Length: 273
Image (cartoon, rainbow, N blue to C red; front, side):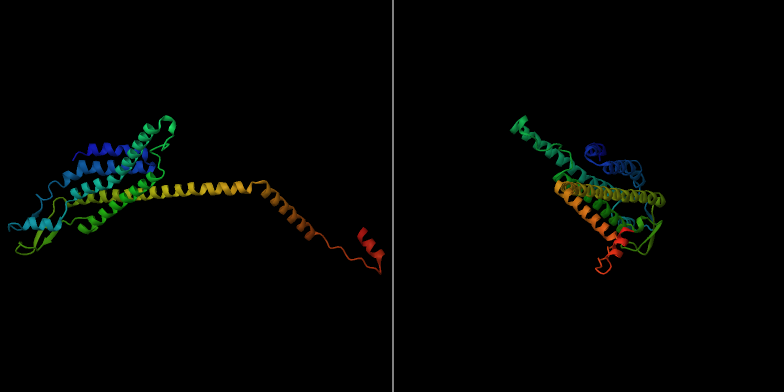
């Protein structure tokens, strides 16, 4: 497969992605595609040829190999890389559709007819939902393939020796896998990079949703602040503060004694003192 053409298509997603999306794309091509092309294909190139069983029964080796390796690691990884990068192409297709619509609008309305999109690549409206759905799809594809790998190969590791007792083998035979340690290392590496990619997708999804929520709450906060700055609100708030301070002064002052009709002079002296 020509991965260069595929890489050229996906490289255009960078200018429409966030910082997390660029990190994800770099991780996919450096630590997944390159490792797959340079090492993984060579490590698994002789998996069937070097799968040896201690029997000469015709067909026993092939049947045992099919039982323990229903799908090759290399083919599963190739299918995973294709499916996990396809949602990014949907973003490119959506941007291309916007640009085509903008071009048709300019041809129909002329230069003075306004614009449909101020920036066709800006994540607003339908493009925002397309980008969010692509993140969910990429994380879901990686998670699904991790489950498939675990169901085929428990704990993502290969044993050194497997026992096979399926027909046409005459009895239980021992079969030996070629280079199991090396294959386990590359398998765990690919699983780890897939988990990191899932985490990056989730972080980017949380970032986009949080940013949209902040943008949605900003106008309400601005309207609330503007309403509190109006003259009526200011005057009422100042009158309330004055009234409150007056109440506090009255509460803090000493009560005046009542005038006594029997001893008026005593009251006057007390007031002067």
